[in-house]
Length: 137
Length: 397
Ligand code: SF4
Image 1 (cartoon, each protein chain N blue to C red):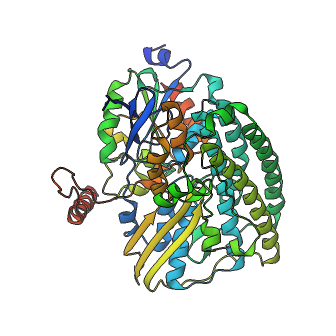
Image 2 (cartoon, rainbow over the protein chains, first blue to last red):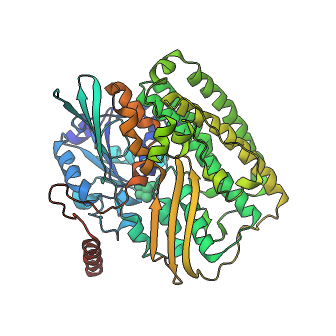
Image 3 (cartoon, rainbow over the protein chains, first blue to last red):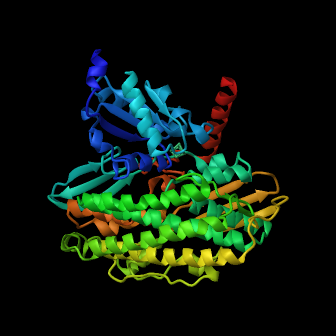
């Protein structure tokens, strides 16, 4: 068992970074934690500080205002950290690629480990994405 | 003057899902001044809209805000239909209103949950979000997606609600009604919630008029303002319903207004479903050949208040100017009245009480530097940024 898979074997703690998003992805992420999907069963917990997190979820495009803050947050994160780009915006920029505030999809700013496409992705898709990520790391 | 402590909340804070920064200037426990900073969420939608065709703009405005992903297209459709003078069919009207009211139910449930979360009462949060799920299932059945429904187009809707779906919708509505009773009971009778929300974050009738507040924020202070009644559109003149108001203006009154509005929404949907049965199936659009030159104003009542869209057309396939005003834009300004003088713990729930939505609010405005009086960003600069960006995209292809 490698160091990475050892780190991510149990209770993943998740920090959520909402970039310039439309809110839907944020809500679907919260939805994963509420009774129907209830990710907390598996020890997956939303935490308030990046310093406690194993996974960084990023959704929405990154605009010029967010960019340096995302980099700062990534730098503060304890490594190894898994970064997941959620939604069409996070993966590619989606509808907003031509916007004047667009500073790149998430992977132009920080390294990304997994992409969950969809606009917004269903909670099931988000969960499936994280499960795949954990199995492969 | 005594020394004030600055307490920042955000921009990335576990309490909020959206990025925004509040600065609370406190003296001990008491909030003395409040400032907020946005811009973390700006995506330049008004500008983008000018480069899209009318059909595409619907998908764009839908993504202004995820929770109101029906209200923005609704207002935009109203505006464009005003320009082109289009009379939509009754079936379209009913379907549009059904989607709008379902959205109100899911949005209010979401708010009740979040308000519980802000109070540290996570049971309410979990309950409300659990009961919200069936509404999302309905959306998935009717529109094909849980959020961002893609239902609107100029002169009609994209999908019909077939006869066979009506009993399913009715079943879910009955269920939601029961669950709302339960929630209303839990919230309205709970002494802890009374203690935390009554008399907190009060906005008087004069305050909401001064600040131009809209939606449940204004209605909770006794102002009877609702676009559905004041400037009727879609099926609202065809059905029976009333505007809910409360007098106290505190957080509790806002919760009360929202919970009671859910009952109204359920009744509107039931009447619309009955209306649907009378109309011919499949009669959901009128053919639109072109959008003539002109200007149109579209309004719609979103769960948070009035959404306003201004569209200017030069007869081409895309708008030449598109101005958007979302309800949170005016509601957020009331923070100065509701939060100053409160304790920090009460300030957070007062902030949450107007159900602010920052992705709606992030419109571009020209800013002046107070010290030098210089414009920070003017129109030419914006255009040059946009031109530069277009070049970059072109080069990268
Ligand atoms: S991917 Fe879609 S739902 Fe998610 S933030 Fe972007 S526009 Fe909104």
